[in-house]
Amino acid sequence: MEAAHSALDRARVGAGAVLALLSCFRFAHLHLLWADEDYHLAAALQILRGKLPYRDFWYDKPPLNALYYLIIAAHAGWPLRILDAVYVLIACYVTFRLARMWWGEPEGWVAALLLAFFLTFYLPSAVIPFAADALMILPHLAAMYCARKGLMVHAGIWAGFAFLTNAKAVFVLAVCAIWLWPRWELLIAGSAIPTLAAFAAALASGAWRGYVEQVWRWGFLYAEGSPVLNPARLGIIRTADWLGFHALLLVGAGFAFRYLRSDDRRKLGWWLILSFVAVCLGTRFAPHYFLQLLPPMVITASRGVVLAWRNHRKVAIPVLLATLLVPVIRFGPRYAVLAHDNLAGRPPHWSDVVMDLDSQDAARRIRSFAQPGDTLFVWGYRPDLYVYARMVPDSLFSDSQPLTGVPADRHLSATNAIYGGPAARNRDELTRSHPTFVVDGLGLLNPKLKPERYPEIRLWLENYERIGQTKFSLIYRRIDE
Image (tube, rainbow, N blue to C red; front, side):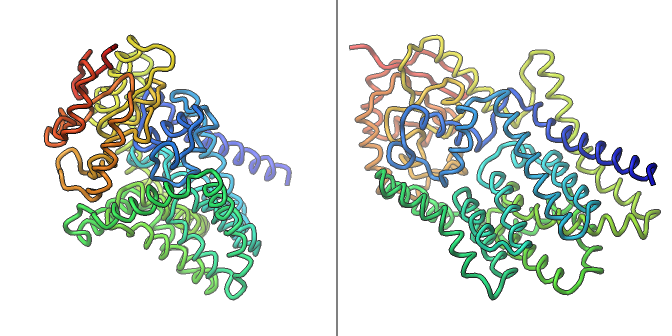
């Protein structure tokens, strides 16, 4: 008996060590920023300078995304990666609690390890930055944990927090309602607590009108104006790609469904279906959208993995190893290369980060001229420049999307605006501002959207002189009068 307890304790320690190790892989990205974490860091930096989102600066995402980065005072580097590693560990803990409550401790550890593994070995642009989809993982899991325990108010509160991170949390609330049906009134009441508190704060601070315009009007226009020509084909390809790299979850979940009780099959089935519907919303099928599907897949697969290990170990071992090796081989080497570059003190030679490296270069040049209290405006979508330069704009706008009406997901090649009339008014408002520095981070990449193409911006730029240039950026400083 003592030997069995000792072996179990060693297994727990080993699993915990693997969780900690996996959460630390993101430190390889120590000197990089990814979209959209840079956007939320820049927003947090403005809040630290006394500005309110929606009222004092344009921010088209729910508020908790910016508030998350206040924890580290909007700093990149070590504070950022430590914060994200801690977030992963907390999410793994909630995953462990949910799977353990549902089935047992082995499933709890497997679920936690699977979550940490697939938040490590996938496309960096999807799993490294903690933007809306990644930040929703924790409240998503917490809501489902509370719903599973029958804590209706608590489940609703967590779903409300998820909504203040990502509007797709309405599907989390819907799953909770199905699980708790027909006793859903307290669930809805719980979800209203954080959301109504946030809306009341927006009304009281004068940010409500901007919130509606920036988050909802711009968001709906963005969703309606999808550049995807064949969404069905793209959806099939992207889903197949995701399932290919997450084959262990697919196999484990499929095996689990063979043995689940009807009630468990119903609950998990609805969770999986509605989470996938959320992925499909907007028909873009971006890799980070699939993070909403990750929690139900992890929880379901944990049961299948444990059952397969217990009952079909000779087959399970090679299948588990094969499905784990595919993402490790595909995504693991990049961590090693980045870590080696960090230790050698050299920038990475990686096409995915050339824009970020250019922003670092431009920020260094700006800082060489900067004085305390200087401000910055960036034409294009380059929020990392604000973070690296530790500067904020002195107007409502920090990028060119609301000024051209062309979203960042297409403005490197397209010019068709989804927000034409308001964009013209926004350009007029920008010309009344006087930032110390202006960076054109778009014109060299798409000359059809360079700032000089707009007469009012061209006249405004006459008050600036060019003081530097990088591969993708033109740097201007206001001419002293």
